[in-house]
Length: 621
Image (cartoon, rainbow, N blue to C red; front, side, top):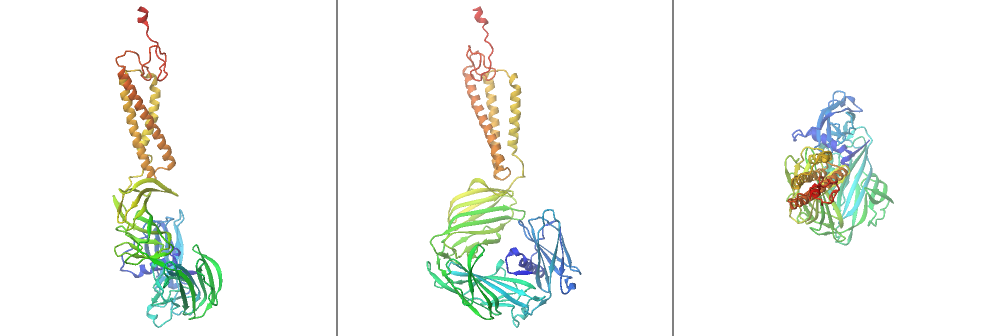
């Protein structure tokens, strides 16, 4: 079984091991929230292959990683037969669980668990082993050294594959490290700096003293991995020129296979003595030349040279073409993600320093759990927020940062400030129960992606130092179609029926008596329709109405509103005509109140039949 040590968080093993260690030993730490509640259970057994009785009384930890919300932690202890259970937990398929244990002061990773829809129970195993400080069963199978020339320095990523052929976990406790030997040890190249490990956490068994790196375990039975990174500056590499960096590697206990990965572009590298290759290899979307050597003896060293382009020290060199701010509300926090789209002019990479960074990014008050990608030499800014030190390559790049803010209970405002001019600022708010507004920004049409809808605000030419306030407020309870729109549609149908049924019964009162009420009714209906359209637009912007339904209903409401407006104008025209002809005793059209000519048999306005004129007075005249 392969056990990654210091590998990516997605593998889960190191994370749960560290959590298990912290949960059991850090009794004085602040309490961690419990895992999400629910109807499910994770049951399991601790297994010791050599001594089954040792599986009893072992501390077990369950770590919950919800997609949205706060991670949770719960502890348990195995019974005499090694059985444990975590009950009344959530079975949300989007929540991942990691199970781990701690035995003989060594953390052990169990399994990663997620529930399928409808599942309520999972069974897991956590295997433990006795612990030994004797490293003779350990051998270094392979070391992969990946090199990337970036911005005046050589970035190096090393992955060490270690095999423990024994049945015990090898771990040298701190008290024995001065007199004992480390299962794995190496000397970093001269000038190496910025040593780091994945997750930003150095495991308790890793020691770096000067350039001497040692790993004292735990090394579990089977295959293990250790990964770390460092950088070597290219001394004398001026902007626009290159300098050769020599990578010197040696390993105290030797290596069964050493692999060097040099970039295809610009490396100009030839294989060192004793290495085969090159062969083409793709890692994380990048193309490399692979050189390999079998059996590097203990203490032997190899040197590998690469050309590295110099970086230009140019503080403030990043031009912000666009900044995008994404917000989403969950039960525990307001989740924020920011994208900084910037460009570097020229052909050389650029760097800054702590006093004059490439860019400063202030963070809003209350921001927690900051994450970012890629690194770009990010450092805490003394004035708050983060500073981009570089190197950053020439051309276009995107920096993403993410953080959490307290949840929006009532109205709240997030203030964002930028230390460099921003050509275009966009704010996108997911349809998770928030209204958004900003005095500095104007509203755009909502943006849709997959099954999500985002309210969209936009501002141009935000100045350096300008504060942009973004106001949030919870949405009112979810409703269906807007009430005004529903009432308006119902009124339309009822009105049409009434008009149709009452037509034969209507008579022709004086034109002035009909025109004013007719115009007033049309105006009231039009005003109601305008309100309904506004409500419908708001519901569309917040994702309550699908786009197809919104378009169809809005067009229908708008058409009826225009018809009401025409009715108002016609009524006003008829009123003017009736006032002008009031002294006349000529009969009006019974359908539209228009005044016909004496010889007309049909109305010239609407075509209705007219009553025959009374010519009695003519006969007697």
